[in-house]
Image (cartoon, rainbow, N blue to C red; front, top):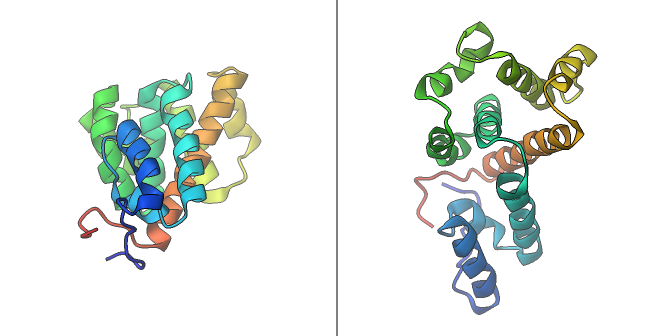
Length: 174
């Protein structure tokens, strides 16, 4: 159970933002019910994550591999549960999702994906990215895509840390 009660999205001063969340996300998920305790934070979060997920040039399959690896590395099951169906829809295979825990030993990821996974792992585990890892990922992306990739990794580390600090889980009753 979450450490704080979930905010009611139907409270009048939250309703307009909750309606926008529904329009962009389909529903007010547990994450957003928690964020709605602070409308400025919820709105900023929605703007940033909408940009990351829907307005960037980074291919959806790569974005979702990043999100799923971050969720795994950070022990964030809610994040993984929410994104596994999206990853599959974007073209990530079930075998690739199953192999993420030991991606370095898997032959399911071509060089570009391996570079992305190494970069994600370094940013998530160590924060400081070794030059060799950055050099390898740089071979595969231009400046815009590298900024978007880095922002995506950072954003979903933020998401998992928020979820886990407040113990937000999909089986909670809002």
